[in-house]
Image 1 (cartoon, rainbow, N blue to C red):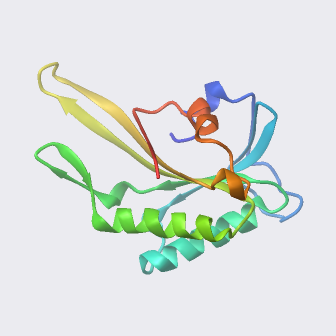
Image 2: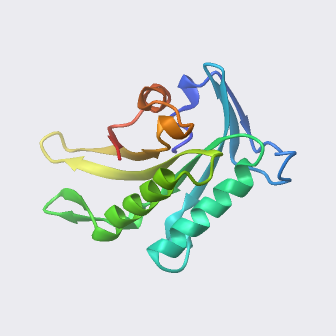
Length: 167
Protein backbone atom coordinates (compact mmCIF):
# COMPACT_ATOMS: atom_id res chain seq x y z
CA UNK A 1 0.00 0.00 0.00
CA UNK A 2 2.91 2.36 0.61
CA UNK A 3 4.07 2.15 -3.00
CA UNK A 4 0.51 2.38 -4.24
CA UNK A 5 0.23 5.83 -2.64
CA UNK A 6 2.97 7.10 -4.95
CA UNK A 7 2.21 5.40 -8.26
CA UNK A 8 0.15 8.21 -9.78
CA UNK A 9 2.67 10.88 -8.79
CA UNK A 10 5.82 9.20 -10.14
CA UNK A 11 7.06 9.57 -13.71
CA UNK A 12 8.17 5.94 -14.07
CA UNK A 13 7.97 2.79 -11.93
CA UNK A 14 9.65 -0.57 -12.52
CA UNK A 15 8.77 -3.31 -10.04
CA UNK A 16 11.39 -5.78 -8.85
CA UNK A 17 14.32 -4.45 -10.91
CA UNK A 18 17.72 -6.09 -10.90
CA UNK A 19 20.33 -3.91 -9.22
CA UNK A 20 23.29 -4.82 -11.40
CA UNK A 21 25.74 -3.21 -8.94
CA UNK A 22 24.68 -5.12 -5.81
CA UNK A 23 23.14 -8.18 -7.45
CA UNK A 24 20.07 -7.73 -5.23
CA UNK A 25 16.45 -7.03 -6.17
CA UNK A 26 14.81 -4.00 -4.51
CA UNK A 27 11.01 -3.63 -4.49
CA UNK A 28 11.01 -0.94 -7.19
CA UNK A 29 13.04 1.53 -9.24
CA UNK A 30 11.33 4.89 -9.79
CA UNK A 31 11.87 8.23 -11.51
CA UNK A 32 10.42 11.59 -10.50
CA UNK A 33 11.46 14.96 -11.95
CA UNK A 34 14.81 13.58 -13.11
CA UNK A 35 15.58 11.89 -9.77
CA UNK A 36 16.03 8.13 -10.00
CA UNK A 37 16.05 5.90 -6.95
CA UNK A 38 15.24 2.45 -5.61
CA UNK A 39 12.49 1.64 -3.13
CA UNK A 40 12.73 -1.05 -0.50
CA UNK A 41 10.14 -2.12 2.10
CA UNK A 42 10.48 -3.86 5.44
CA UNK A 43 8.02 -4.79 8.18
CA UNK A 44 9.81 -3.88 11.39
CA UNK A 45 7.84 -6.51 13.31
CA UNK A 46 9.68 -9.21 11.35
CA UNK A 47 13.07 -8.02 12.66
CA UNK A 48 14.32 -9.35 15.94
CA UNK A 49 16.42 -7.58 18.53
CA UNK A 50 16.57 -4.21 20.22
CA UNK A 51 15.60 -0.96 18.53
CA UNK A 52 19.29 -0.17 18.01
CA UNK A 53 19.81 -3.59 16.44
CA UNK A 54 16.84 -3.01 14.12
CA UNK A 55 18.21 0.38 13.03
CA UNK A 56 21.59 -1.20 12.23
CA UNK A 57 19.88 -3.93 10.18
CA UNK A 58 17.69 -1.39 8.34
CA UNK A 59 20.67 0.74 7.34
CA UNK A 60 22.59 -2.36 6.27
CA UNK A 61 19.72 -3.72 4.19
CA UNK A 62 19.13 -0.35 2.52
CA UNK A 63 22.84 0.20 1.85
CA UNK A 64 23.10 -3.21 0.17
CA UNK A 65 19.89 -2.90 -1.88
CA UNK A 66 20.61 0.70 -3.02
CA UNK A 67 24.28 0.20 -3.90
CA UNK A 68 25.10 2.11 -7.09
CA UNK A 69 22.10 4.45 -6.80
CA UNK A 70 20.04 6.05 -4.04
CA UNK A 71 16.86 4.88 -2.41
CA UNK A 72 13.94 5.34 -0.05
CA UNK A 73 13.24 2.62 2.52
CA UNK A 74 9.62 2.21 3.66
CA UNK A 75 9.26 0.62 7.09
CA UNK A 76 5.99 -0.85 8.33
CA UNK A 77 5.61 0.18 11.97
CA UNK A 78 2.10 -1.09 12.65
CA UNK A 79 2.87 -2.49 16.11
CA UNK A 80 4.50 0.75 17.35
CA UNK A 81 1.16 2.42 18.12
CA UNK A 82 -1.62 1.97 20.62
CA UNK A 83 -5.17 3.25 20.60
CA UNK A 84 -6.50 5.03 23.67
CA UNK A 85 -10.20 5.99 23.48
CA UNK A 86 -10.05 5.90 19.70
CA UNK A 87 -6.92 8.09 19.51
CA UNK A 88 -3.78 6.61 17.98
CA UNK A 89 -0.66 7.24 20.07
CA UNK A 90 2.92 6.22 19.26
CA UNK A 91 4.67 4.00 21.78
CA UNK A 92 7.97 5.23 23.30
CA UNK A 93 9.90 2.75 21.14
CA UNK A 94 8.55 4.51 18.04
CA UNK A 95 10.06 7.84 19.09
CA UNK A 96 13.32 6.08 19.97
CA UNK A 97 13.40 4.49 16.51
CA UNK A 98 12.97 7.90 14.86
CA UNK A 99 15.72 9.47 16.98
CA UNK A 100 18.17 6.67 16.23
CA UNK A 101 17.59 6.87 12.47
CA UNK A 102 17.88 10.65 12.52
CA UNK A 103 21.12 10.41 14.51
CA UNK A 104 22.63 8.12 11.88
CA UNK A 105 21.71 10.61 9.15
CA UNK A 106 23.19 13.50 11.14
CA UNK A 107 26.46 11.56 11.44
CA UNK A 108 26.48 11.38 7.65
CA UNK A 109 26.42 7.62 7.26
CA UNK A 110 25.08 5.73 4.26
CA UNK A 111 25.08 8.24 1.44
CA UNK A 112 22.84 6.05 -0.75
CA UNK A 113 19.81 6.34 1.57
CA UNK A 114 17.59 9.35 0.84
CA UNK A 115 15.00 8.67 3.53
CA UNK A 116 13.29 6.19 5.78
CA UNK A 117 9.51 6.43 5.69
CA UNK A 118 7.80 4.94 8.73
CA UNK A 119 4.42 3.73 7.52
CA UNK A 120 1.33 3.08 9.59
CA UNK A 121 -1.82 2.18 7.65
CA UNK A 122 -4.89 1.56 9.77
CA UNK A 123 -8.68 1.56 9.65
CA UNK A 124 -10.51 4.40 11.40
CA UNK A 125 -14.22 4.23 12.14
CA UNK A 126 -16.51 7.27 12.17
CA UNK A 127 -19.64 6.40 14.20
CA UNK A 128 -21.52 9.50 13.00
CA UNK A 129 -21.19 8.40 9.39
CA UNK A 130 -21.20 4.70 10.24
CA UNK A 131 -18.22 4.25 7.92
CA UNK A 132 -14.69 2.95 8.14
CA UNK A 133 -11.80 4.69 6.37
CA UNK A 134 -8.30 3.53 5.55
CA UNK A 135 -5.88 6.07 7.04
CA UNK A 136 -2.23 6.39 6.05
CA UNK A 137 0.38 8.02 8.26
CA UNK A 138 3.91 8.49 6.93
CA UNK A 139 6.62 9.72 9.28
CA UNK A 140 9.54 10.70 7.10
CA UNK A 141 13.11 10.86 8.27
CA UNK A 142 15.03 12.25 5.35
CA UNK A 143 18.73 12.76 4.97
CA UNK A 144 19.58 16.43 5.53
CA UNK A 145 20.06 18.38 2.31
CA UNK A 146 23.56 19.46 3.38
CA UNK A 147 24.50 15.75 3.46
CA UNK A 148 23.14 14.98 -0.02
CA UNK A 149 19.44 14.59 0.76
CA UNK A 150 16.44 15.98 -1.07
CA UNK A 151 14.15 18.74 0.25
CA UNK A 152 11.00 17.77 2.12
CA UNK A 153 8.93 19.30 -0.70
CA UNK A 154 10.19 16.53 -3.01
CA UNK A 155 8.83 13.81 -0.72
CA UNK A 156 5.55 15.67 -0.26
CA UNK A 157 5.20 15.74 -4.04
CA UNK A 158 5.34 11.95 -4.39
CA UNK A 159 3.28 10.76 -1.40
CA UNK A 160 -0.50 10.84 -1.08
CA UNK A 161 -1.27 10.27 2.61
CA UNK A 162 -3.57 11.48 5.38
CA UNK A 163 -0.78 12.48 7.77
CA UNK A 164 2.72 13.46 6.72
CA UNK A 165 5.11 14.09 9.56
CA UNK A 166 8.71 15.17 9.13
CA UNK A 167 11.29 14.31 11.75
